[in-house]
Length: 159
Image (cartoon, rainbow, N blue to C red; front, side, top):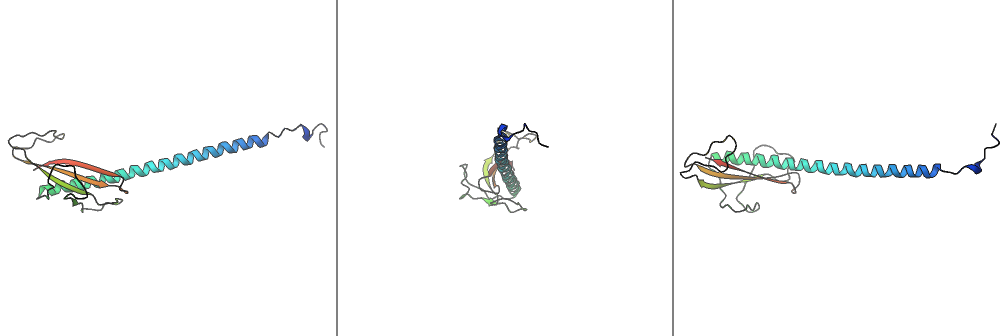
């Protein structure tokens, strides 16, 4: 049985505007969360790219140090290195996955230490070079998954 005092004339229709506002809020939340997720994915990809470039440069640096122990191919001059025209050696030891280019290194002869036995600065735990030893600067360059991620490392090697 229906209530005789109930009438549709007394309804104000608030449900539709309230539900539309709720849908609008949910839409804004979802759009914002998808944009944040996309940005986090880009940041993670860039971090991975940078890490791959560092590992490639580190591998080339160690290969340059190993080559210095023998008879190294030297790069002449202490100028900034033009990686496209310099006398570089391409790293070929081991497999590096994810790099856009093979890492390269150069070796510079910095001359002998002469009569002095000093280094400036010496790496932690490394004794100063003996008098008359030769110093070499090894510079390595590695790239990540894209050519935008580049890492350059240097070490000084005494022989």
